[in-house]
Image: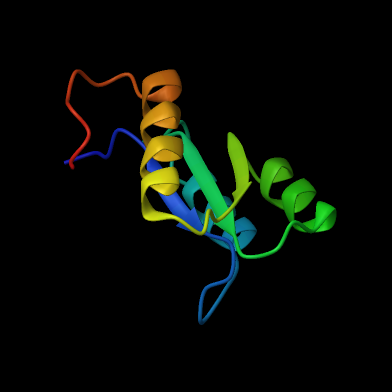
Length: 88
């Protein structure tokens, strides 16, 4: 099944978020999935790279789980087109 949206960490073991976004963009059926990129640092160059590669939102990871959940739900409400409920 196709995801309604993707939450993606900026720094991954083998690549970064812009690389993943470029790969998603190479696939016609995946390129329009909204992507929310999270980072541990508020570096402007990381945000610029993620947005240039197609991220719809970039945010520093909140320190509280509830704040993270609220950010993801707000993103889902704004960008997801599917008629599904976000998982708790």
